[in-house]
Length: 201
Image (tube, rainbow, N blue to C red; front, top):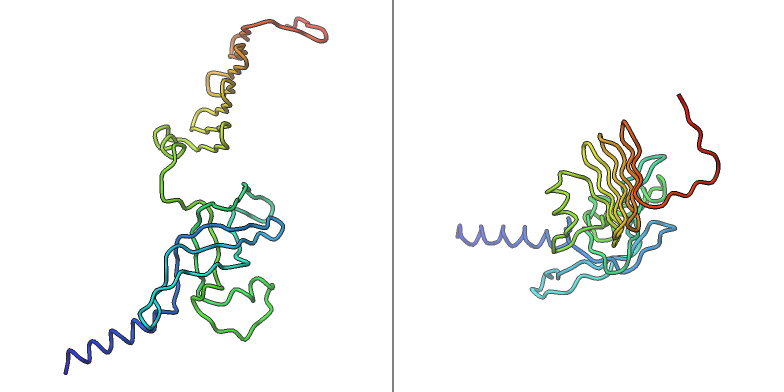
């Protein structure tokens, strides 16, 4: 009798959680930068009450999270195929999205209350590994890389490089270089000047 009671409680709890969603990985199918909304496809499948499993449906009009303040934002391209983390909010998102307009919906943890955080992938990235090794912040866009460390700053694009640190500034481009130090300026390559060069005290 006790075993049957425990099993019934477990079944009741399991059935109550079928419609509760919290967070899951997904893929961005489309993104509208004008509205900041995306269509996302959750990965995996959901267990139904009858025991069957169905693939998650696509979710439309999902707000995309960017690091942002009232006057500042860090923005980057979001493209179809990008991985993301889908967070399902506890309450209905419509009042927040409509700036306070109340709705009669009482859905909790429903897929329609999702937000999307881009950047979740199932594999690692070389830039992340380099950031850990160098103890630096790295921003990379294909062949362009920006690295910020505690005492130096560097931008690289193929064979070109701009470096700035406590010892000065170093610019390399096309086999030529310009070095600015405390005591002197070093130029490697031809120098063309438009205007006057004047000696100062």
